[in-house]
Amino acid sequence: QVQLVESGGGLVQAGGSLRLSCAASGSIFSINIMGWYRQAPGKQRELVAQIRTSGATTYRDSVKGRFTVSRDNAKNTVYLQMNSLKPEDTAVYYCNVVPSYGPAYWGQGTQVTVSS
Image 1: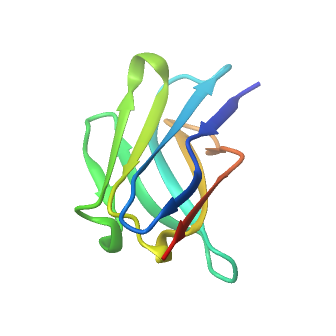
Image 2 (image 1 turned 45 degrees about the horizontal axis):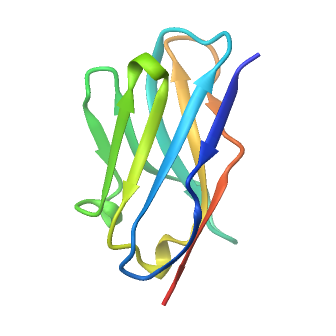
């Protein structure tokens, strides 16, 4: 059984920082992509950032220069460092793990709220 445990969400003022963590455990091997999505009320879930085994990263335009995604392959953990947070970053953030085969796995979601 695969588990993705997220942590690090919370309430922060605009301009502040948070670091999200997501640790994968269980029968999951050959992880290809690890990343983060978010979903705000009334909006579609959207990609925030992802990182491949090569270290190559992808960010949505609105977070470039503010967010940094990283991973620790030995610990099967992905991080999202979020700086200069804006109210529009408010959403539930979901960890996403894509194996080399089979379905993707999702974390339980962690709320990030940025006040103005």
